Length: 168
Length: 181
Image 1 (cartoon, chains in turn brown, orange):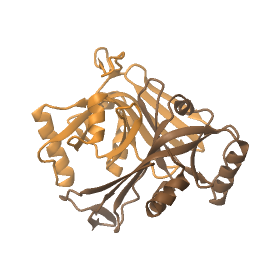
Image 2 (cartoon, helix red, strand yellow):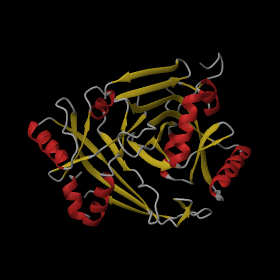
Image 3 (tube, one colour):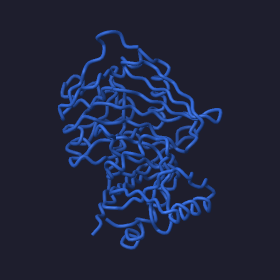
Image 4 (cartoon, rainbow over the protein chains, first blue to last red):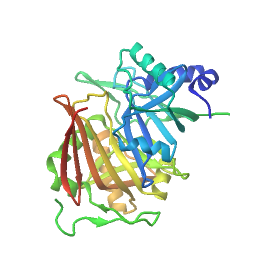
């Protein structure tokens, strides 16, 4: 498993595009519930010092998921439909580690503030996401305009281009 | 509330105590407003995110297109795709509508489900018809088709600076809760 920086060093272009999408600003995060079934929720991934984090509020039952079972999956949402729309999926999987050092929480808060977003709450649970695998899927899609909205052209089955990057 | 005997107990692959599940139509009959709002959400974004379990028990997220076919919430998946194999192995999953920002007015729907592997040729054909009517395309050859049997539906949205939860289960009906965000 590697940090975001190590991944970005190995795959700078991919990491750049991924970062753009992860900051859309919502991505989806999957964990495993106590009963073993999957849980999904939208969140904003956090970046500081070249590391990737998520913060979970102190009242959410899901904060225990990662302590029990650290495996996570983080998936970007497709952007809004438009003329140059190419669907790009960026998925990161690996293992999450709870971070309790005040200095790290401070660095994350500073980074969030720098992009005009709220600082962490004192009781948020902060987790660093170590990366095992990054999966990207690109769908070339032909768009057509109907009224003032863009839609994928009907009757065409887009073909995905997939790429897998695994941490050494 | 679902009347006596409507819900069915589902057996899951792990042989654990089955949860009571209902079809989308049964959910919609019991909680019409919530179902209508959920359906609008699903139709608007055209994709939902499905959370499934990999072989090693870790979570997977996959965007899929979903349709209501004769009262069932369904999704077709590429033959032998990893997400489909996940659901064949362990039917426990969550279907989640997409949101685009934190304060998305329509909110988000989380549907906890058991995925049933649909083999009935008539149902598969109906799925193809419904899909074709929507996007002028239907899968040819082999594909996986799942119908999602519903254990619970949660709607979460923000309004009046509060967080509003509405949860529906076949056993307890609608439960709502309002919290400070």
